[in-house]
Amino acid sequence: MLRTHTCGELTLKQKSKQVTLCGWNIAQRNHGGLIFIDLKDRYGFTQIVFDPTHKKDLHAKAQKLGREDVLQVTGKVRYRGKNLENPNMATGQIEILADELTILSSSETLPIEMDDPDAVGDDLRLKYRYLDMRRQDMQNNFKTRHNTAQLIRQFLSSKNFLEIETPLLIKSTPEGARDYVVPSRVNPGKFYALPQSPQIYKQILMVSGFDRYFQLARCLRDEDLRQDRQPEHTQIDLEMSFVEVNDIFNLTEEMMQEIFSKILKNKLKLPFKKLSYKEAMEKYGTDKPDLRFNLELKDLTQEMSHSDFSVFKSVVDKGGIVKAINAEKSGELFSRKVIDKYVKYAQDVGAKGLAWMKMTDNGLEGSIVKFFNDKLQKQIIQKLNAQPGDVLFFCADKPKTTNEVMNKIRKRLGKELNLIKDEFNFCWITDFPLFEWNEDDKRWEMSHHMFCMPTQETMKFIEEDPSKVFCTQFDLVLNGEEMGSGSLRINRTDIQEKIMKVIGFSQKEAEERFGYLLESFKYGAPPHGGIGIGFDRLVALMLDLNDIREVIAFPKNKNAQSPIDNSPSELKTDQLDELSLKLNLKKK
Image 1: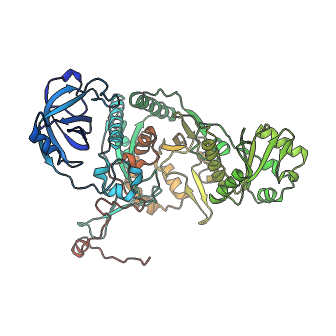
Image 2 (image 1 turned 90 degrees about the vertical axis):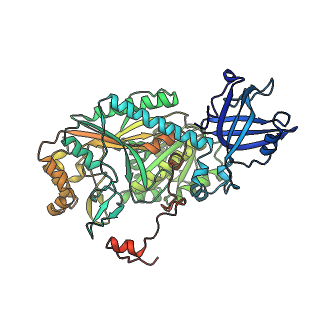
């Protein structure tokens, strides 16, 4: 080895010992003729001293060092001295008096600022990702990611799970997003798809008798990007045979408790709270509620159908809903100017407007109060538990719009009123509808995916009334972010074919797309279920990061491009010919 120790391990225990370190020169200071540098590797920092009275030639050589030069330094460990210690460094009590210096690699002037990543644009950070990842916080991110991955493997292995890899080149199947496709050279005109998830193959593994499977699976989806979405991501994927929903809940909760206890020293409270899809939408306007604060939505549709406020009444008459939220004790904080900002925000996120009232010692006040008689005002006060000093916000629109807007208003209020607790709050969302109606295309679609087992009680409605069919689908939510999704799976060909028929899959199309899965079910498929959990998103939230790119080594930008290698890129003509492809580019 070129080094005897790393830059983060030396202490006074090694005092007077001759050591050799290797790393990057990240800082250099000249104090009274002495040259100090901070030598860094991924383990930490060590201060190196070049003393002209000790090694004059070495001191002269050190004067010419550049930032981020890669160095090998040999010298003796010594105590820094009283009042010269640095308590913020693990090696802050010692320094190395240099005897030898080798420049292993010189660095040119860096193209990005290393000390202030916020001053660097996203594309520059991604183009020079190898420099960006030298920063200590980034290295800590990936250390946490590694430790979490290893802990997951240990935990699931201890529960008799086998880690089995599923193919990356598969048949294209509809799973909610667009597939990335790969042309086959040896089968001209035919294409593989990259897996959006290992869904079908992990079900086939259950048929194979591997009753407990897992992998940290790579999943690829061609969809529009955002902070918590990338073209490729990693999923904690697991499947079990002969289980019920609560078995998956219990295992997942125990795994999360193990992760947060061992990695963050944080004891999660079990069991996680469970909310039905209907309850979550009614109380929070979303199936991904943030339960770190209260502020529940209240449905006032019935009450407003009797009001004289035409804006609300006309919405209700057309099948819309009215929801309200009580921003408790915010009256003094919410001037008319602040309220107007909320109204503007509601319009920006899809509402036609946002009505409001203030609760005072004299009752409700506001420009719309006059449209509500005394009886209705009392009902509003009672339902929202309004107290003097509260501000009430109202939104009336189609159910989907109202819920989306009020969910965002709720989250903004939680943040601006400092209501969000500093904690990790998991919950399960259950009892999802299996189908949803596409009004534009006038047809039924899957709410999630077509492999989810309907509930026993509603299975009879599959053919006669799909709107009444619920499924064993469940989502795992953490602090308002969807962490994972799972279900019990269909293991009978007859049920799978009925569901495919509802969403418009002919028998021929079903055979073409899923014939191999349906065929496997004919030979004894055990009841089974599982869950897929977003690993990148989980690690990011554990580190209190909003962007999953901070825990992915080489992510893509918002245009699904990789600035480091300029992919995707064009293929040469001979490559296209070899793949039997001809371009027909659409004009932008």
